[in-house]
Length: 350
Image 1 (cartoon, rainbow, N blue to C red):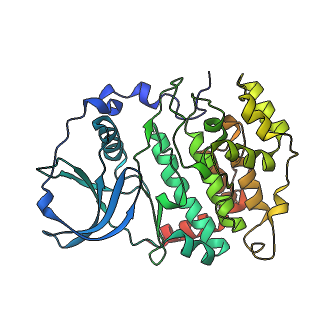
Image 2 (spheres, helix red, strand yellow):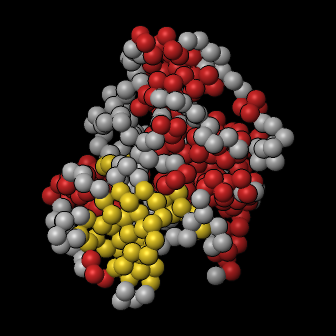
Image 3 (tube, rainbow, N blue to C red):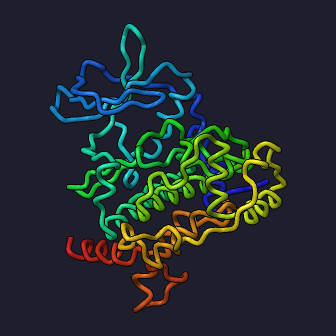
């Protein structure tokens, strides 16, 4: 049995009402308090609109849910309520439903986000360090609250670049972590699915989010979006194996007593590990430093137990700032040192 290395027993130690979303009693607000302004997006389970609160005249986001099991709606709402106010986590303001159709809508804080396909090509080395660090804060917080996001990808990371504000959104696939529990592997979006999902390892944990973060980070620094571009779930594992190698994949499968089905095994074939340096070119070299490669390498590991946790990444980052003048508890990771330095100086001047 595989268990999370961190925050293993958060939900074991909390009262049942914290994680028992099926028992949640929903308190509906008044739908007439909100008006739709324009459509801003759509997903598998919802349509998303910019809206306005007619009482306060404040902008908001209205997420109108498509017909789905009540249990799934309750899970999303319970999770959003539990983590509301956490760093860089989108705030749920209200829940309302249409009196006739009973269609529920979730009301969120407004974020003036730029489409990542437009924004990412403009980001500097420092910008990428800054936003990945902000995303780590959100991930460490939700993990510390016993919650896996399970759908980390650029579409779900809203960035208001003018305000340098980041929000992790769309908690529709998020789930409470219980050690040893077997979860559905049909989560996350294809290009960001961890190997555990692709080889049908069901007792996965928070480390799934760290793989997805690694895919996102690789896409940003190498300017290759998506980084692992599979045409279906089987091909997704093939694309990963062509970079990380099949010897390492087999070691992972053996450790967890897993076998690929023969068709997938044949598709994967045999590949040697490709060095990260092979992805560096004239277009992206200004974004790729030895520290960036080191950080990426610690995220994109087949074995979910070998990946950095969000907290480890942040502690390593933090210690890289302080190690020059005080004892650091862990080996310094320099990738985020400029970000930490800027954050510390902001705190000192507040």
